[in-house]
Length: 159
Image (cartoon, rainbow, N blue to C red; front, side, top):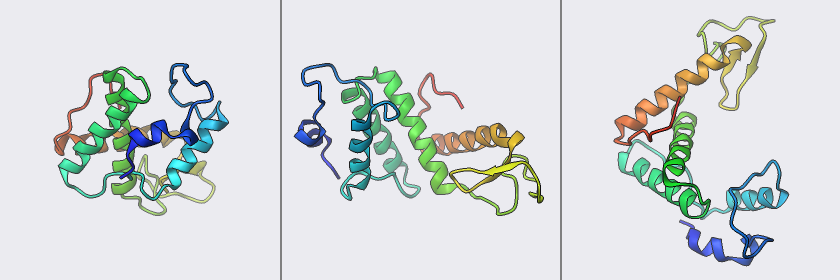
């Protein structure tokens, strides 16, 4: 596992505004941030998403991600927990989602040629009108699963 304390003081990750308060990363506005994120993503020692069904692994990941956002990102603890929980919801979904080929993931009807639809990042096909329904369902399923793994939904997190 990468020691985030070492990364935070490494010159290659140093802020160009040394001494200025750290701001949460906004890759869409900051190319330096984008290159820093891509280096982190390529680091084979960086902590990956939790894998498996062990509740302790998911709980540890939640605590770690919340702490990093609070300390390095300067988020208030409550907001850091909401962001960490949302990240784990996404990771759970990408690991556990069951996608049925040829079926709309929202309404669960068969996709027909000519249907107005799109393929999402998780591989699911959805009709344009079903995107919201699908998103609400998988986020609820993932949050229920994380709750069953003994994580507490942070106050302020919404599906």
